[in-house]
Image 1 (cartoon, helix red, strand yellow):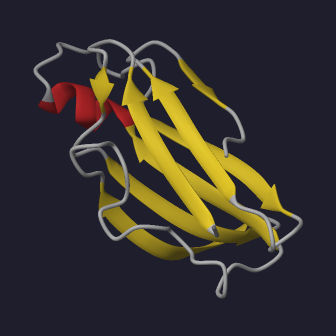
Image 2 (spheres, rainbow, N blue to C red):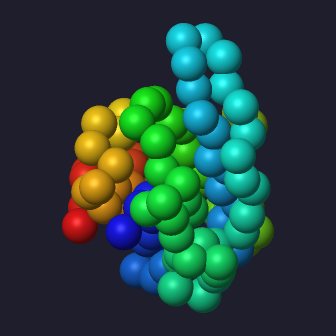
Length: 117
């Protein structure tokens, strides 16, 4: 339970292993960094949940994914500036008893997200 993420590289059809991710708690325009990590071989946080059920609080959060750096690291020749550099997803947690899974499907040119299970 708690909060989790998973990133799939839709250009290569693989998990986005090694992509840098940051998690923030937000309040208005203020953001506090909670965690910074690189995704594991499965495209997930290697330490498990980003926030476990006991520590998850009602409020707003932001996940920031280092998309351009990841694709450049895979050898993709991206323009400067890249179309997508860092993708920020702002979302709210209203019920801490539920699991919040925030996946990202991404290429250098597009992304999609949804509330997963």
